[in-house]
Image (tube, rainbow, N blue to C red; front, side):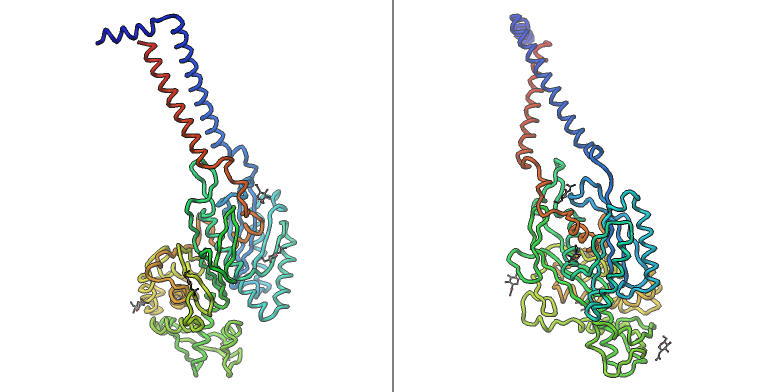
Length: 512
Ligand SMILES: *[C@@H]1O[C@H](CO)[C@@H](O)[C@H](O)[C@H]1NC(C)=O
Ligand SMILES: *[C@@H]1O[C@H](CO)[C@@H](O)[C@H](O)[C@H]1NC(C)=O
Ligand SMILES: *[C@@H]1O[C@H](CO)[C@@H](O)[C@H](O)[C@H]1NC(C)=O
Ligand SMILES: *[C@@H]1O[C@H](CO)[C@@H](O)[C@H](O)[C@H]1NC(C)=O
Ligand SMILES: *[C@@H]1O[C@H](CO)[C@@H](O)[C@H](O)[C@H]1NC(C)=O
């Protein structure tokens, strides 16, 4: 056996000089091809991994002022300049909370606070970038309400704010009241942009539409309004449905904003209801406030709002006081809060939330942020939980006395006293209004940020207003389809393996 093998090997290697030559030539060629292939692969890999450093001319910045009903928040965003049309690249680098009321009630002090925030933001941007940094202001429900009440007052505030923003060293874009529908849509864009639902990097480092991707719904709870937005079935139509094209895909987004259903305005409506039912404003019982707690408020703080004007009693005068006494009564609190919702207009109607508003059935996951998040956080049920858990936690929170609440929570008194009310509000709007139930409550995620960037309409607003999410995805598509690219890579790898095997076999034969 051994002999025969060595003989046959002798026969091959010790053959004619021509055969030896051709074997050597083939080996050399194969070796060359292999080395060349490896060199090409290394070159591609190097270019891919160093692409960032080759193309990075620096950062870009954008500023958005979210002029909310209870306060203004200034956001500073940044992103790598060459990636401005990619998804998920914009991040929040600074957030400044302007102390004081919202711009609808702007006074000398809040002007000072606004300027303080803008100084801080200005310092965070390199001076050479100032004049290329866009700045936007969007005012929401607080200003929508003022506009309804006094159009001139609202316009004068906007003009004053515009004048101030134009005086800053930035590239002024817009300062206006955005509609509730815009607010809802921009919130939805923010959520899905931050979660990378529009586009994702595939294994070849190219941007593609995620296979079978689902978008996440958006639930925003502000001080004066609340917004819901989610992708509806294609056949859903109506004034609350908007078709938006993002990165080459069209989405049918349902969105509705409920004015006067924000956390603070809805609370005023609760307080108004109680005061209206009471004959003695020196002692009004409040089932949502804790026992041992009482507070005196001016009647104008409650009845001065556009949202309570239909509740104003005949005996009303603005300088009257109303004193509320807490009762820690979860069952009556729930009934009371449910009472400020108009469910009657939906009776007998299918696909109706409240106030007679059409809403397709909720589907998929939802991000519940802003006031929704803070309420869940105060109860200790942020993230995802069951409806049962939310209800039982709320029930026990609402049963506690003021002393017990203060002992167990490190929250300012101003906010702590109201969390039982807001828990009931959140439970009611989600379960009775939007129709979340025991089966899909766990699809709700109570969260306030993604990758340290706040979930807020302001990011989606900037992206949309500066065309940073193109309707078409031309720029981002691979030159060849993914499947062909994968096929080529497979054939290429197979060729290398075959060459390698040929080389090894030849070498083995050559040596023995
Ligand atoms: C981003 O898209 C806009 C509009 O489609 C285009 O004008 C701009 O050049 C793009 N920017 C980059 C860096 O590709
Ligand atoms: C400013 O923003 C408002 C609300 O988003 C929009 O209707 C308006 O067209 C914008 N104006 C400009 C000049 O972009
Ligand atoms: C209402 O209460 C404030 C203090 O909270 C007090 O200064 C004011 O005199 C009261 N007004 C009336 C009409 O009782
Ligand atoms: C309600 O929504 C469901 C699911 O989208 C749909 O099948 C049904 O036709 C809708 N009903 C009405 C009255 O629109
Ligand atoms: C919430 O929990 C309370 C107390 O455990 C219970 O009485 C009530 O029926 C529950 N409500 C719902 C809607 O599950």
